[in-house]
Length: 442
Image (cartoon, rainbow, N blue to C red; front, side):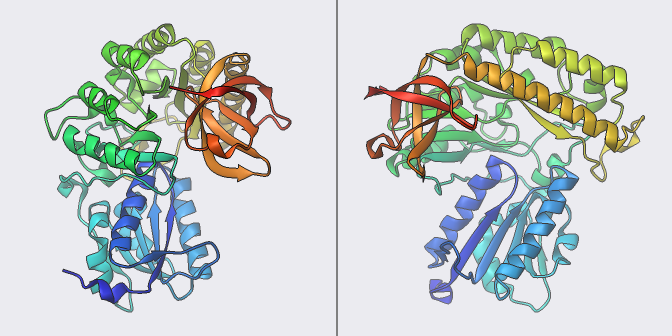
């Protein structure tokens, strides 16, 4: 047992790159350190310990991690710097060579950070990691840094083997917490003032591998937790979105009409090269089923451009498919070469300049779809969860279907669902203005 007095009066700063799952895990690290007397640094304060939770989904993500570590070392030159997360898991020795790093922890070691802080104070960086194959334990995490929104980790790891992806090597096999434990965490978050909970994981629709339970049973149990205003499901593989899940969400008490679905390509030929587990026909059926059940639902779609094997014909086929798809917004990613992935054997290779042009076209298509989706909400009433952050005299929040709303500041509306009417775009086109209906949502 580590003596908490070792860390008395120590101050820690936390930095997170990447997905919502990382944010949940960083929060859990902060909670553990706080239990040992380590206070979180305030803005502008020099830290004794800096924890950097890294991402490695693309080469650009790796580069951002390196840049952040160097930046943090300049800001806190005397701090003990801990690098953890997926980049630290996949390239621990490379991370250890970055100036300023004292300790590199793999993903499985995040939950044991205190012991390593206590025992590893060597002059040269210490690397503590284990292969992804050894990651069999589910480590619970629930963020609490934002009093309005929490991120609840319900699943980790992935059993899929998409040809371009290193996440299984960074996160291990699919595993999850129990429904009983997760509902207890949701209840605790609600009692701490969390009003919205986002369910996070690597492949959350695969929930149940560890416990023999099902994702739909998890949704039903969470829906009965009092005090939570609403839930959002962060991302679901299209082949795992069942009609039962769609129908449940459409009629649930607390689950928002919000879907985030990875498409990756609208070309069946490219999907086969990517080793995805669906085709465009299945994807379209899922989107149309959601749209029919929830006409105002937000449907976000991930797309990768410039993947190996994406010929001009494949891209045009993909663009035409997405253009006709009744979705709300695209999240466009440029394909990134990842060491050790089967995709490196695929030909042809898309020149970077061609991939850049394709990305621009899809981002322009996304902007058009998003604008049309938001403008279709004008005149509609919606429930907004306004955030604590106040910018000038305005406050912001998201409707149940993820439209960003802006209203004059009202202290009594913060952190509670408030019924509003959407009017139109604000002056800079970043949010929809709204008016209060002077009653709170149920």
